[in-house]
Image (cartoon, rainbow, N blue to C red; front, side, top):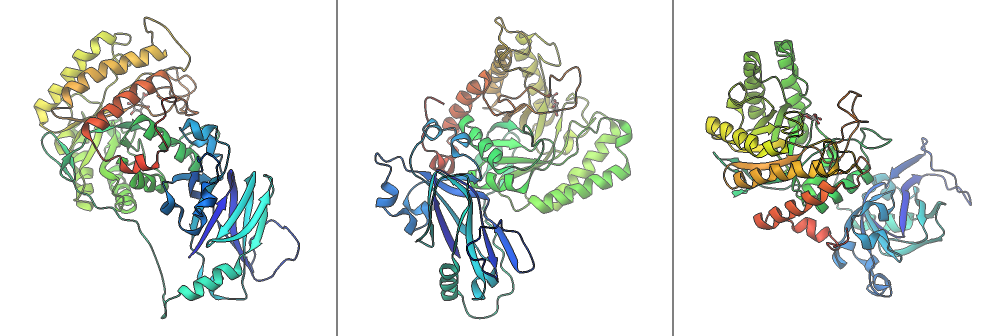
Length: 505
Ligand code: GCB
């Protein structure tokens, strides 16, 4: 294994490439060919800014000699990106000085075994002065950003790896990080490792400006920094399974996931037929097969807001839930409902009742004063009927950032805050009894089809689509950290990643 350590203010687009032919003096863009292979080093790097007074502690303590994590806490930093924009730490936003990036790389065997192969480390661009160590050896320096620089590292990786090779033929290696925990549900609790767990989190979407729905490391790290800023401990993958990298991050950061399949929009009677059922079960097989090894995933959600008041939906949901339980007997199964407690035909089959309600938004809009009574009735009716733990899986209000009005009117930041506050009064009464979670709709504004109820998309985010906080985000932050401190759920990983909880963010 080769360990490359790059020092820079920002590292952009590094990659390793191996080739049989040396190109003297040139700086060609590394293109693959039958004789040339590339290994991209983009993705998550370990990162630390040197906050010491002279900014030289890293050199004095020789951080390049050992894995970076051994000399102190590190952050995950996506490459390529600008570290200033990703973090919620104001000190990083304005940081000037040395920052350290580190990435462990496993090279293909041929690169390290075949001594005629030339291995070149190329940094696409790093601002503003870069020093690169490979396996602790000072290999490369470069001044000025924007332009690529490279070095032949064949000797470094080939010598060491030859020495490390164990004898005997090895045909295949696969490494899988593991985490071990138990999940269980009682009449009124959701237990993780035998302890009551309260979901205080969000619903998300895979969505952002320009990229739309698509995986993006800088966006993902930004979102995780914001989740930590909020004090959130959970999210639902509304309304489809997210990229696998997202779940890998959840495993590492201790964020708990309700993993939802794309069973959305089952609103009409004709959808509950046998063909659709077979297809739904097959999709659940794919979801479970892909995600079962993620300890972060604690529950499967087979659908969002199906027309579960229909008889045919009852049978359909019973079958999908039973199938999912058979595929994975270790996790509870649910679907998310917006039906009435007395009419819902699927609720008898779920382990946890997940309720969406939009009091004072889609119902009795403008009447914030009705929320407490309506929400209390909602919880009490469901619990009396089913004696199962309940999660408020959606609630929220459309809010256009910068709109203000007092007394609050719909679409203003004040209205969103007031609506949340009303929900929280009741959630606080019931969370000590049988309500085991609250997930705001939504983490961030997101694009939708146009319609009379959407103003350039869905604006129920507590963050804008550009990931900036609305007033409600600060309200939620105070609440979630308070609950986190009360329930004392392990925030150890999150905290060790935190440089500081700044009062200014
Ligand atoms: C819901 C849906 C969600 C919508 C949300 C809304 O009940 O589950 O997909 O985006 O309401 O804002 O209307």
